[in-house]
Image: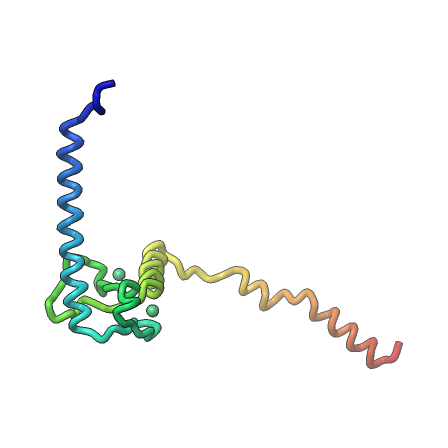
Length: 130
Ligand SMILES: [Zn+2]
Ligand SMILES: [Zn+2]
């Protein structure tokens, strides 16, 4: 069996992808380090405090969601724990998908009370003594 056939184009693509990823990593490391120097190691949402042992769970959020916008004064950065960071992004996603429609279920619950009459009935019976 000959060795695995190689596609030169794929290899080139792999290299480009790897390089892009490396650049992205390097950039991410840089702004993260800068942000960690600028700000106290506290989540901006839940105020959880971090130290070196769990620092990996503290992430840098971009306020304008543009990861290329990294002003050195940190005005576009916010330190968030991974959970709050997740929350932040899912909320943004919901807002973009046009959420916020009124809930029909809530309206129904307010007008339709299936047990109200029953409770009334039981109460009357108890008081009336049968
Ligand atoms: Zn948090
Ligand atoms: Zn973010």
